[in-house]
Length: 265
Length: 255
Ligand SMILES: Nc1ncnc2c1ncn2[C@@H]1O[C@H](COP(=O)(O)OP(=O)(O)OP(=O)(O)O)[C@@H](O)[C@H]1O
Ligand SMILES: [Mg+2]
Figure 1 (spheres, protein in one colour):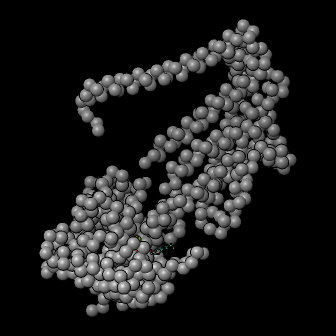
Figure 2 (cartoon, chains in turn green, orange):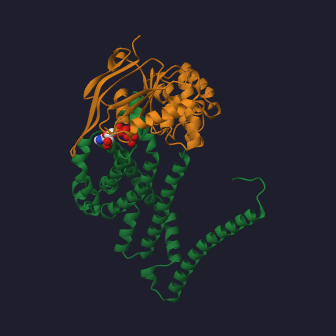
Figure 3 (tube, helix red, strand yellow):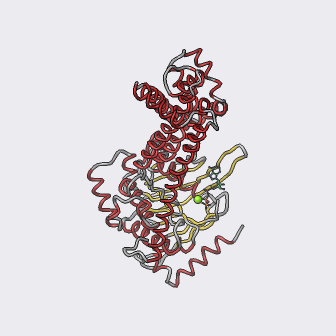
């Protein structure tokens, strides 16, 4: 109920709720400041060895240096590009294969055990083979990333498709439609929420796949920086890359959420 | 005059690995043009199966379905099927939902749109053309579903418990509404229901089926004197309880 003149009790309730939200925001920020300052302080006072544990100031300096020679943008760009390419491929392939499985009971039943097996296989085990097959390059990274996400994507979408209300399908047939109409008028539009929630999972998985790939087969990207930094013992570089990775993954996730809000009906 | 619908010796079984389920056995009846039939019977006796057969969604094991004297597949008639739930698609507006059948049969054009527009208006949905189904009440949704069915100008209407998802009061008025609409357009209709009083209040004849496998147990003609008595008024007439008891007895005696 929306009333034009909220009662006093309602006003008080809204005030209380606003206060609560502001407090949560303030505390979130304070927690971050607290953690960073404790970290910095411990490093300065020599409680932890800042050569091994790094420190917020060292990470910032490292970041600023890389901003100056612009190399950091190249590394971030490469990782984001690889993630987006594999994400798009996962969504498109996952969707097409799920439609194929839905359209033929025989195909889906034949392929089911293989999909289950591939889905539960730890994909990092594939990476070394991919390097041998595809070479030490971006192809390997993208294929590794796709392999992490695509099987789960297919299975989720296929399950969603096959749970479509049979009466809705019956309705289409009773109106004179065929299987194509069922696909275009019921399955596709009805699965939009499922596809989006699935995208949210997949964008994260693709990033995981890209980092695995970059660990093994790259000379650019955030995953490469992490591995390179740990090999030459530049922990500032490693920590900085991880922080950037956190931010990148949050931004990618938010991008999908934004998309979700846009096409909500 | 030939009957609109002529069903003779219809039988159907479902098959699964566990075994065969004979759902309908030797069903024969006719429906005249403009007649309103109601089918009642115990749960699981094959009522929905009967409609699926009439609509062509299932192929009968035995028996024939003639429409206007010719087999259904050759007659090219349109059959409207209304399911228990309205199944309006949330991702379409009310107009979009009403147009679904025309869109599938590629008959959508500006004149059909104009007609739908008028139809929605007549049935009290004029201002909801661009609304989403979730913005409508249960009764309005059911009317929108009826418009979707009528949009294809069916010669024969099949209604599978179309009111059972509604609460009792809405159900009475929607049933009154919809059956009046159907009668005013002189369509032949077959209504399936669990509710005896609903069947008696709308139908010209009530077909009683036995429990599975469904066979015809009795056909009870219903007459309230005048053609134009609304279902709600029928319920208040003295004949109503007489018919009710008659159909009730038919359902009860097992032999
Ligand atoms: N797809 C199916 N596969 C196997 N058996 C089925 C199938 N559909 C229905 N049956 C069986 O056929 C019988 C008749 O089903 P039907 O749906 O026609 O009954 P109904 O009279 O419409 O029941 P209700 O009043 O509960 O809607 C039931 O006993 C049911 O178990
Ligand atoms: Mg039924």
